[in-house]
Image (cartoon, rainbow, N blue to C red; front, side, top):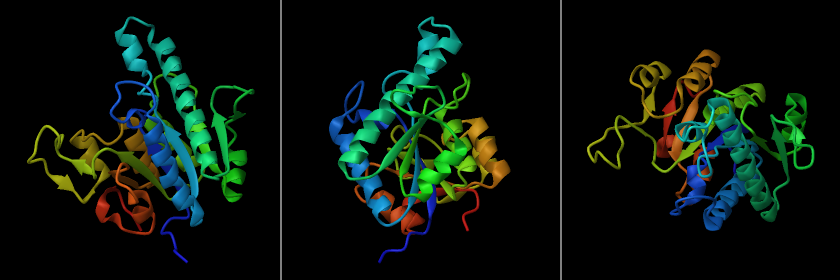
Amino acid sequence: MQHPRFKRILLKLSGEALMGNQQYGIDAKVLTAFAQEVAEIHRIGVQIGLVIGGGNIIRGDQAAAQGIDKVSGDYMGMLATVINAIAMQNALEQQGVPTRLQTSIAMAQIAEPYIRRRAMRHLEKNRVVIFGAGTGNPYFTTDTTAVLRAIEIESEVVIKGTKVDGIYDADPVKVPTAKRFDRVSFDHVIENKLSVMDFTAMTLCRENGLPILVFNMNGEGNLKKLILGDTSIATIVGNLS
């Protein structure tokens, strides 16, 4: 029997990650691969909350750049996260994983409203809970949503899946000599504006002592390795007991 290091996690995925090599939308192969990774850790008893961004469809700042009102653009971005959440829910259920989708904006025909106590109960019953529509408010990113939900559901850690194997002091794709951090403090991330999460999300993590693990979600089996305790494949932000 494999014993996970974490009993309850909040997994944050970017919408862009679902595109694969496409320029827009959802790559079905990537979606299935991610669902399989999540299913693997679900089978060993990990309780999972999941937040997915909407950048593969539209983000609020993209809409604003096109002349759309900022608030309207942010609501468009929230709806994009729901599309991704529905896709992930379907992919997980095809893997035999029970799920619940909760949204911060009422959508009775397709999702439950976000209710903290109900979400906690679903987790206790080993259902993956997918949180869609951000916080339900404009001006907040899905990074902030992920941290807020993690705190509310009493997650032990926020795990952020990216395309690289951790946090660097520069973009490793553009700067081959970029330095990778094994561990970094919240203050260092904030002061040096490292690309991890936005300022609000990082501040929430720091104030609530919620650690973050940043790893490459595209590596097969990486999520399970991380859950089983191999933090060498990730950068740790904050104090991880």
